[in-house]
Length: 261
Image (cartoon, rainbow, N blue to C red; front, side, top):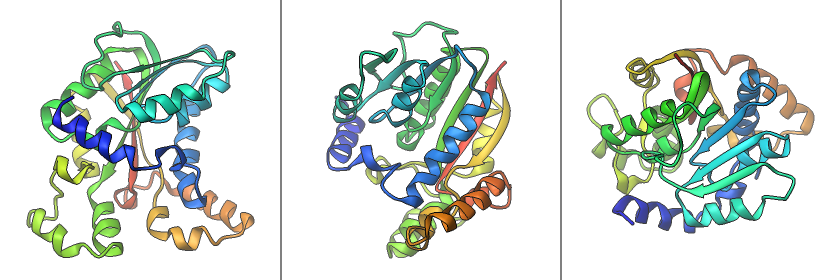
């Protein structure tokens, strides 16, 4: 186990990843939005690969719908939780693996490839490049790849403002408030324009960029107090504005959807 794997295992061994996307109204928005856009492109009979599957929130969701799913997860604890959810009627294979090296998977295998976690924890350009290339390699031509990442600006507002760490953040950022990718900080971030430029280097066509949770993380206290009716109204607002370029950067989680050429 290398240094980064040790850091991530320690983090996730002390974190309830399994409830993250369902524990309250504010957190549900990311899952609702992500699945809405996956299902926009998902077709009957598609084979799905999830790289960095965590505890299986998405993998199990689609396995229950009858899709054939192949799940790859690095963290032991998360993988064991994922496996515990698999029932005999599901067509799902869950293995331990690293997003930067999917050598057990053949080229051009999957119709839909989900990379909804690995880019949160890749700290140098070489590993980011490897992970993106591997996701593209194992996807069929015309297949869709969904890459989630965290944004610089969300760190300023969540970690800096809400959690009282602006001084610490100012010390590690450059003069333009670009957040460095430091493994000691656990999470790596991008600016939206920078990630869009990055994917243009590869043999893919950009389809959509989506703010999957928008303002929700920084408005959680208010959202979680909403009645179900109010929440549905807010969700309607979010889903109809989650692709606005002037708002995307403030989302904690952003989904870049591309097609393999």
